[in-house]
Image: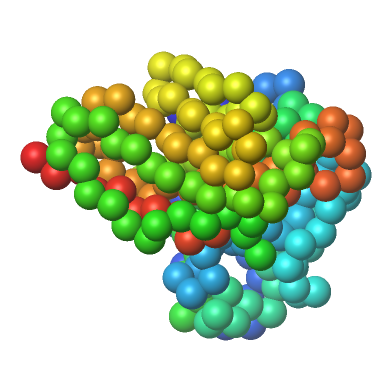
Length: 112
Length: 114
């Protein structure tokens, strides 16, 4: 158990819909990262937040957005969902940027 | 793109040591070598990391060559539960810097067989 929690574990939705994935970092960690893992793309970095502020962006689509709240939990919002958005979404956290990252169990999203 | 090269797959007999190689010939002086593993579709699990010296923890040992261009992760007594994809990643230790994301390659699929 890494100490990072993610909800929900599974999510099934339809194309065009919007979903929100939630992540609670380890106690004391200020930095939160979001990664997407699809069958054909492997694990890809989406976005990083540090103490409530966006710190780095990766291959995140404009239809996706994220935020980190004052209690340091983070949410990843995915809108106008497409079949290709079906993937595992992982959240990771670290004490500071560039410190060791610990991953949550992931949310499996299936878009039908 | 990932800055590391790993064999796509390896087999290991249960109870034997598993030695997983990684090439990172373009590693910079401020970059650490990290190892993670992913069992089935679970979240990647941190194993170990190092800069120059060899490192050991309760899970594994990390041997880094003197020129830092390659490393080997050693699982001393592999069990069936060690079957996973193992990722070698180089990442800068830029404390407080602007970028801390990990770049994952395809990793090595380790199969531990009875």
